[in-house]
Image 1 (cartoon, helix red, strand yellow):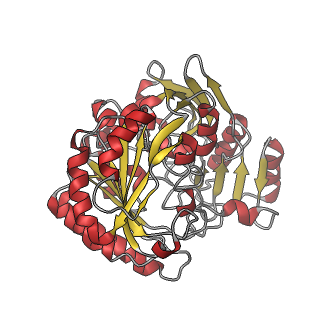
Image 2 (image 1 turned 30 degrees about the vertical axis):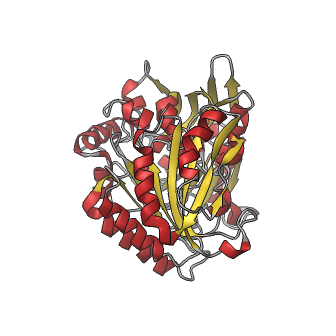
Image 3 (image 1 turned 45 degrees about the horizontal axis):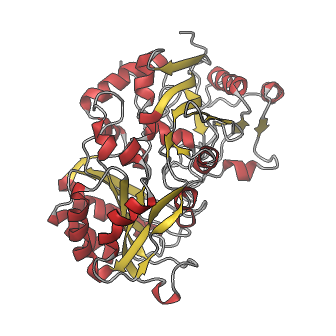
Length: 471
């Protein structure tokens, strides 16, 4: 492997050298003070406020390679931006260079082969729009302005995961630019060790510029949406929910959400601000089957609001967009649990009642189904046997109240600690090396560090849930 680095760190390149890089790019190079700098340094999480020295808005693979080589030559810290949606804000850095892939929007769907080739700047909603034209989809999160790249490299949860698996379970190949600027392909037949690692190992091994996915028949209509009850009924709802999903079909994926009712057009004025619990469902079989499967949930207790009905898959995919816009302040803690025990339910109820911010949420993802039927060692993703995944969001509109929401999230996470069985790496904040090791488990972590040593021995790609190279 050719090493192009100088061991200098954060040595500002001279202006003439920067001009040379700018002229070499088909995209554009943005510097502090340039028009658009403020816009392009911002990321989704408003609590992240960093000032890169350069933003290279890459238009293709050649731009990515040039930007990496420039960063290596000048010892610049590298941040890689796809959708800019990481919770800890790894998509931007102070002083270094952001390799911004957001201009790379190519999507090519082959409806006969049921595959799609997708460039790294594509957002989930953009991918869904193209694939749904042919009644096809790949597991793709729950917020449409999330980037395909980051979601996929960490594993990829979504509304169709129990039927069709994680996003990585539908990944056929990647094109990746390594730390020394080489372009390689990884698949089940080429660079198989790297292909194992990118399926869950994040952006540790290089910059993926293009993904190839297997697509699955979905929609165009699904039976989906939330059913809401008063928070006072949360314990009874959760006990019912646990029994109801015990033998549910793979076509059904659910997320339980506790929060204060948002001020949205579909929410009656008298419910806005009230503490509620919702079970949000998506059934990807026939609409008739979906109605039959979900009927017991819709008729349980006394729902305050029922928005679960037949709807286009694209509409359901965008349902959470309004609740997680760009610029709000987000803090998350996360963990997997093996089962929804009475004690776990009690913790959920207690902390659900303590929610103060109108945009804080306590979410519980149902796992299992196709996710659990992939062998634990087939990909770097860890936690195939998880029963549920918690996403504990302590959020505020601005800095006002953010400390309190962050402490609420930490308190909820700590209360659940005796029941932790793992964690989904895409839900981690900047929590340190040992936490990353826990996310993969000792055996996978050691395998990943060895892979890192082969593909990125100098840890150029370290602004991520970092896996350092083995010594």
